[in-house]
Length: 281
Image 1 (cartoon, helix red, strand yellow):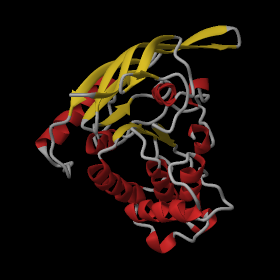
Image 2 (tube, helix red, strand yellow):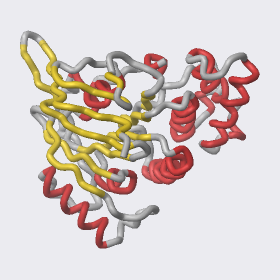
Image 3 (cartoon, helix red, strand yellow):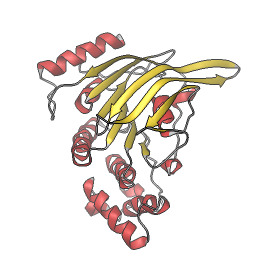
Image 4 (cartoon, rainbow, N blue to C red):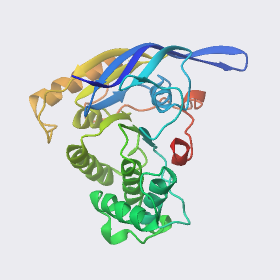
């Protein structure tokens, strides 16, 4: 099976106020084409840093990252990223024109007419045809994330990187978008790396689940998910994987509760978001 992504002995250090901080240490991971990988672990374990390294926003201190055999050395449209924040869209553009902009700037489509026609297809893919002429302030949080996903997919990346994309949404919208993302993935078969703090979400979405530890960030375990989609949280297999993740991550909470961030903890340097998706273009 051909690997879409290969990560070999990846280590990432930051120099912060004279201190050498190890965000990631000796990360090894191979991801097959079309695979949906979820990554879970406590805050500060380097999940976002790992995605930023794959995206090319950060350079590894040691080790290598390859996409289909080509070394990653900078950002590229073969790796598109969707962030947690709901301010990823250009507010002066409509939903349709946000997607069309990405197509034009990356030269995926040439000319206004072609870019808008292709953008309309991706707006339809995320179920927003009726809202294509709306501006971001007229869209709900879930709609904004749908547009961000459409924009990322429109340039036909090899890998879609998603850093807690539903973390800012209410429970009902989050569940709806989980189902919609699964449907989009089934149609496009794009390779996905999806960071989450929610154990149930990790199981619902992932073909494999990467559990990470912190200080420094390491892979604790890679868990295969054999449950057929759509995945029922009541199934015996689902509960078994839940219990395994709770045990690995040291969570003493009810399986229905998500992994919570520690209180009153400063945001680590490696988890500061890149504010603009255009940085990948």
